[in-house]
Image 1: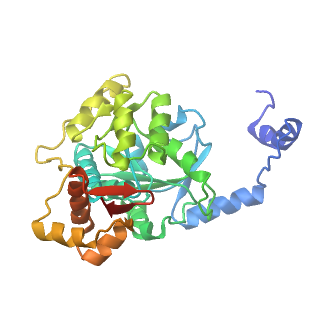
Image 2 (image 1 turned 30 degrees about the vertical axis):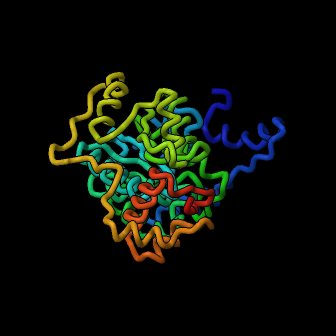
Image 3 (image 1 turned 90 degrees about the vertical axis):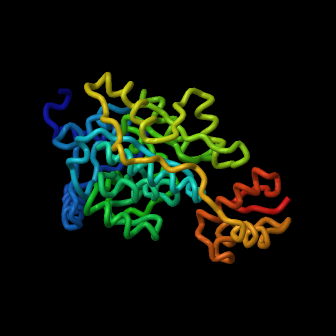
Length: 336
């Protein structure tokens, strides 16, 4: 060892950083102890790379965090995992598919990893909550983001596992999310993208997974839906097309063959959800009456119609496929 001991190496870091022209600040012993106390008082603990329970796949990835704050069931880190990610402004059909896909994978004893974001991430966590799910967050271990995910994050902390790289109390910033995405991809044998635009965080996660040699999978969608364009592009570039849990397990077996073992088949009772929901004529009439040539947010259509968001999404997809609807930026739609 260059410095003889770990303590001497840490003491030398500030001087090395200054020589390299970097303004690197090293935490004091008091600050480190305060962080340990804060995480412990919250019911969590710190995992150090090279130490017990630190995830094996993550440890062997590029830019693995030297320390992670975690809360929940550490045994989940010992089980094979798959990441499910996708659009925040997900369709009703997409969220249902993600939830039931996650439930099917959890029934096959895979841990589902995602980022606790709105839309697909949230649906995947709820679907896998009973069987095992890991939520990787962009802020501190104690910070729920988005705020509406507070209950889900608390439940995962009790029944699954929450993982954070940022210090305790850190509010998530834009720069934290790509760093979170690299952890999501590195924890899993493969990543499934359910819905995602061409330029989205979901595709960043998929790219990181591909660069790390992990399996990349995508759920196809209508070429008329911007949320499906990223998935369709991934498939064109070689990602595995996914229609149900069995497809995911088959794709992952090629990866796990190299690390020993295969995944079991999904539970026989599991039947993957279709990518469309039934909407009766009255629902079509109600939603169509609310549309005009002026773009309107889909959330507003849900509020005004009083219909479930999944039904509204199905009606809009039917209208879009029929050439009667156009989608605009910001999750807005308009009549043709």
